[in-house]
Image (cartoon, rainbow, N blue to C red; front, side, top):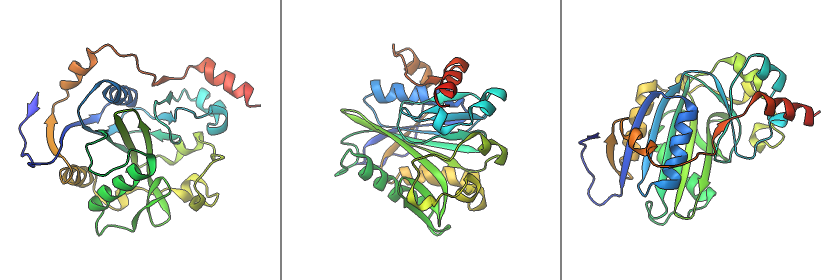
Length: 259
C-alpha cells in the first residue's frame, strides 16, 4: 500500500519502508532481494530487532571474531550477511538504516566504497548538525573518538547498498561475545569495546533521529512511503538469499579449526 507523500519534483524517486522490531535476518534477506531483483531505489529503517543477534560480514571468520564457546553456551544466533564490513551484535537498542540505490540515482557519485561512504556522511551530517562532534572516521560514524555507527556495503553491476547499524543503546554484557578484531581502524588504538563505542541516546532522542534521517533523505530523493505489506509482494519473487544463520555445527567446526 502506498501512502501519499509530498514529492520533490526533479529528485529521483525512492521507496521508504519503516519497521519496528523486524527480525534482523528478515531485514537483511529483504535488502538482499531488493538489491538483486528490484529496479527501484529504497530506504529501509528498522527501529530495533527483538532478539540479540550477532551479524558478521560475508568474509568474516567466526574463530577470529567471536568468543565461540560463550556464543554456543548462551545460544546467541549468528548471521552471515551478504555485504562486507565488520561484526556487530544487535538488539532492540540498534537502529538500522539502509539505502539501496541505482548507480545513476545520485548525480556524479562514483559507485565505489569510498565515494559512497563520503556521500552517506554528508547526508548524516544534516541529521547530526549541531549535535556532538560528528564525523566519518575510516568507515565508522563517530562522535569525537567514539563509534556509534558501523557500515557495510555491496556494489553490483547496476546498484549499490549502504547499510548502517546505529548503537542508540547497547547491553554491556553482549559485548563480551565479540573478540577484538585483528583488522581494526587505526583510530581505535587497540581500545576495548566499551572504551571504543558510545550510545547515540546520549546525544539525541530515538524518534528525533529517525525523523531527521527521513528528512535528510528527502533532500536527496523524492520519498514514497510504503506500508510493510509491500514486502509480501517482494517475497513472491523467486529468490534464494545468501544471508543466513550459521549452524551450531559450523560454529563448533570453526572453533576447532581456530585452535
